[in-house]
Image (cartoon, rainbow, N blue to C red; front, side, top):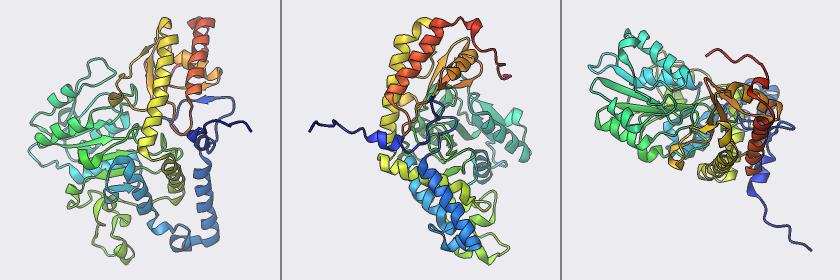
Length: 417
């Protein structure tokens, strides 16, 4: 009998996903694909709802009443955090508002919030509106650190922007456009040395980068679960609150943030749950939570976040090598930093005709993502993609550049900047 050869441990996990037919899907950093495990959990939740009605809160398997706490415990290792520092709730922007309402003091002598101009726009909207709600002028009290190239940030520039008037800083762990991974440890240390609270939006890092919040100890973080965690469009979000802030009452109080043994007492006085759970506001959606629970099972079976990071690096290494070998003569530049310690799970390619090239790629069976003004993002997902797909995607892109002049690319209108 012939030896079947080594078994690819990732092939079984890849088989869990509904892969678009005849496509190489490299847009998992916008929306991860559906897995059979996530689908199964969602169908089970709807079946429990159909069968049990209101009794699903206590009789469903798992019971809905404490499902958020159990999923938070499964999620915490991806952040290197303690389970009671993590809450699965809301969505990214709502959770950022809650963290600001809890931590930011508009009456303090230092009232400036520090951010950066490359962050996802929703975070900047939240910061601006929060300052306005607290009676402060965002034009005065929101400070944006500089970027030297419009694509990346330098640690020394962010630290230099931590001036005496800054009370709180918010940065992305991974920049959504360029894919740069910031040095969270150095930034946290610098902020704390200056008496500044610091937090990170981990939407583009969770599931692709191994965080160690237990050691780094930022003050807060927020993120989504619909990218590398494949929990579905508009999935339930997450937040992290370092335990040094557990004594603070939630800025936005709601009944699901009441301690579990008092939640149904309906007492007029808010009795917050201990830890990050006190920052829950309204009743969590079990139908939004279910796919995340399924995805976390797959991540555990893959070996956890360290295995995901190793797999992500292997994919991006293969992708970068192929890009540099095949695409450099065609005007492409990889703007994502090269060192493993400085990039997340996707690579960003700059090209003057990026929008039309993206349309041509889709027509050729490769799903990328475009970011104005000139970036093509390629995100091989650790659980879904293979090195062969990375190489094939670059081959198809090279073929497009060889066979077509830019003016012959699909004429679809580019989104307004």
